Length: 378
Image (cartoon, rainbow, N blue to C red):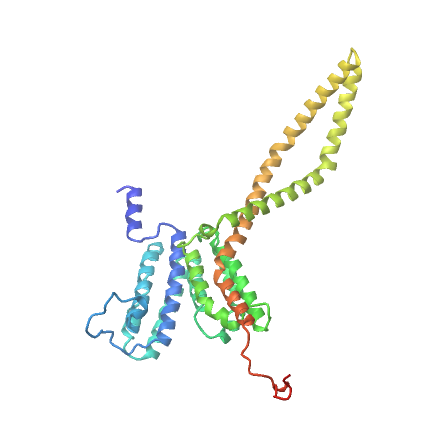
């Protein structure tokens, strides 16, 4: 069997062919484990999951599944992810199993939570031993899922109380193996959310309130997950206005760089060359025989040839450096615009906050102002 055929077969069966695929799979694995544990903490797992007749009028949605069935779905996702990462492990290492967690689903909530935590520890040890980046991706997915969990507004400050800094460090570490731009975009978006939560916590009137932020946080988390796992490329969200802003900013920054570079090389490089060139041209013109017109022509030809030689000597390295510098500038502008598009839930929370502040309060009167009486009326 050829290598290409084997790779195609492995891809069809979900086997990762490289570290990038394993990292993304581990991130999904961490997210699924966090969701499974939260579901085990909060869902009703007492029912047997059997539905009563008659049959439903339409196919059941995910939110309509019984608690035990939904927990089983999370554990199925864990099994699939573990099977996909397993080919990266060395022979002889045992893949963690969800059997104990599945067996504890009918024995009360506490044994189930302990079984899930034991599974989490096994998976954490296994992924870290398999590949350091795979282990970091597992921790990243788990932490992000816990950060964007639906909850009350008073939980926001605790979720962004330093955890986002560690998440940002993990994103930096995994940037080279995550989908393009995903780590930078999510890191910038996460910083914007942390700043917004900080301002909302201290009661900044220019920021959305904690309640509005809490309502939109889960929607933001879904976008982060889609971007980090490759399901959504943030560049696909850019419209004509975003591209126009990117082009304008890149041109402005390029112009500033050219001006700074010209000032930097003029006196130490260009000025001595021009002095030497003018001296050579002057001597050549003075030594040339013929009329003044002929001497002027010789001077112009020599000056043109000298300027051409100077340009050729500095243009090639200058253009090479410009190309190397311009790519990071373009990437940084892309990240800014893509983050603005990804941060739609944050923008929605701020709009909701402004709408709530602008809504006129109910007129219940004031204890400091007396009401109108018949005598006061004209």
